[in-house]
Image 1: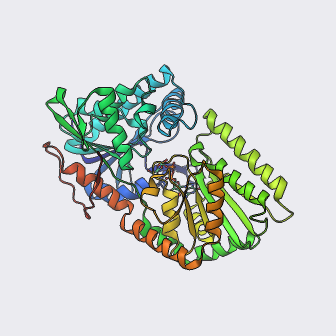
Image 2 (image 1 turned 120 degrees about the horizontal axis):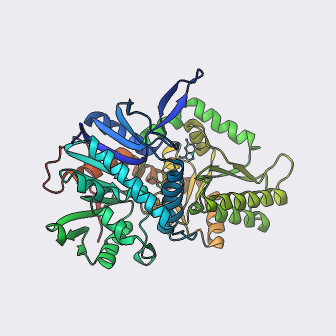
Image 3 (image 1 turned 90 degrees about the horizontal axis):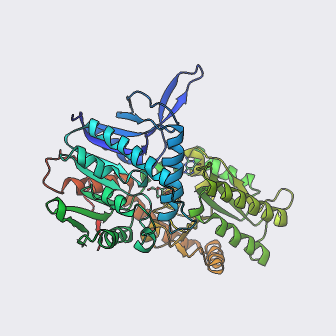
Length: 485
Ligand code: GDG
């Protein structure tokens, strides 16, 4: 029952969005995500297939080819979208894995849907993968797929990458289905995480919940002939060169100047760009800015905060609540401090094109990334990659994966509002030479560790494991992955 594809990516979403032409004819356009950028070259070279949900409930589209990738759609009923996606993925796992910032909900019906949908993804992967192929499963929505796939196809080489944090065992232990999730992941040959700390948390969970020998980045499975599963960190990144080039375009630079003019030519532009998600620390950011205005340490007209909050998961209760809280807070700040023609906060609840994002990054003197917990945070890296002029200061939460790499940012603990306020003032007043030195160092890091290198290092590590007859994958660059203890 083997298929034709030597490399199969399994992700919650397909790498394309459905668009309708003026006459109503549907077509597929590449979605802007980093994962697509990272994998596109290798998918094209390796005869790759991509398995994912098309993003709307109902029957899946027929398999189709787009941008050199064979796309296989998975169908989800409206009820499965509610239970598997909004429910178990985003109402249980997402808050649990982000240190229970909000309380996770545990519902057996959600779990049953998660199992059922994971089976469907695993079955599709089993049908597409050629004998000895490599299958790369992405993220927390599909943690059971590695095991389900191995049962069907023991000949495959299976990798899994978790884009969000893996929590400490004391938190993970809450999950009623913790053993099943770990067993699901242990179906893989290689389990990748953003930070070494996430890999360590996973290994500890294997020891504590499964009583398995798990040391020095390897879990041994005595019941499976001592098969070994490797766990390591592979910090994800962005297409740094593409963003640098975009930011250098004259029309993007002009747009950046126009944005500053439209904001009333303030001395300081502060910027936040996030999905509207409670993990991103948007309320903490707003509170510190409000207090700086109240204390008179920044003045309206002199400084303005632009907050892009991209709509996200709008049917999940906690996101409805967050949106209300953010909008009440922005309204209060502007009501109290704004003057006619001089807003304190520009709150933008929409998503923008890549050019506009690059122009916003260029227009911002200070970028505020204040996540309470974040697997990586690509926005921090995107800001750095756009600043070809070596200007601008990044204020970065220590609770992001990016903080492991961007040590020259102004680091903050977003829970410490006084510390956050001081960090913002420090960023606003940082001498240009110091800001330039820090930005140069961060730019070097992001350029050298880009998303292509991330994908190559994961696939190389996977390819170098085990004795299954995997197809060798031709990749350039050979960065060492971090091994967790
Ligand atoms: C998860 C993990 C991890 C946002 N608004 C617009 C827009 N974006 C783009 C950003 C960035 C991406 O979306 C968001 O990535 P982040 O990494 O910041 O955050 P999550 O969405 O939470 O992603 C995270 C990531 O997976 C990858 O592994 O880093 O920790 O939570 O690229 O630029 N892009 C455009 N318009 C918008 O309005 N074009």
